[in-house]
Length: 218
Ligand SMILES: *Cc1c(COP(=O)(O)O)cnc(C)c1O
Image 1: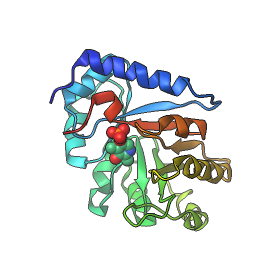
Image 2: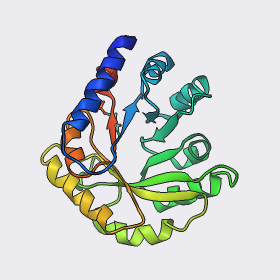
Image 3: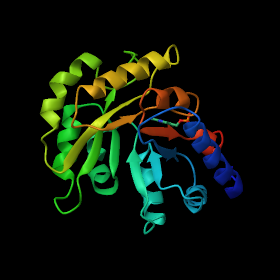
Image 4: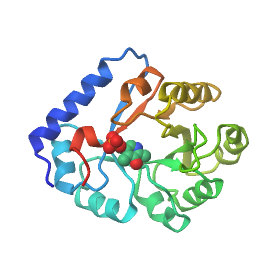
């Protein structure tokens, strides 16, 4: 289904006003999650001023990144990462939110070209210890950060989570406490269509919104 460009522009405005409706001191940037959406739909969002896009599936993303090049868009990889896909991710993305193994961080570091700027990475945290979700456990983070923070060609900027819907506010607050332990980091990626206000209240600096911008996915 093709989403209408006027609708996308209106939805972007609405999501922005939801962000603004919540008290917060930090800068919050909106990532339009464009997985399964066409390059046309993404162009509709770009025409409305949107610059950050999030993708989960590499092959699909690469095609759209290529089609939409030359517009200074910022691409965020937010999906599960297979080791054999890291080289294309390192080459074509600006941010990776879903780093869940030290090995993946090492490969991204090795494969990011010296001549481009550093690849920004976030560690995915399985904040509610759900067996269905990937990510480091909270208590692993202190061991993992020293193994990653000094790798060349990448910059460890912070943390990402997908909380359980049981008590997202509490999960987001734990993430904020985690970030506070690392003064050199500045990024918390959390908040989706259904819980973005709670995430912003708790210190999110990136919110990742798909459905409320482009409509329901097929
Ligand atoms: C799909 C997805 C989103 C966006 O979800 P919506 O409910 O459509 O807003 C955000 N983050 C991740 C990691 C996703 O996979």
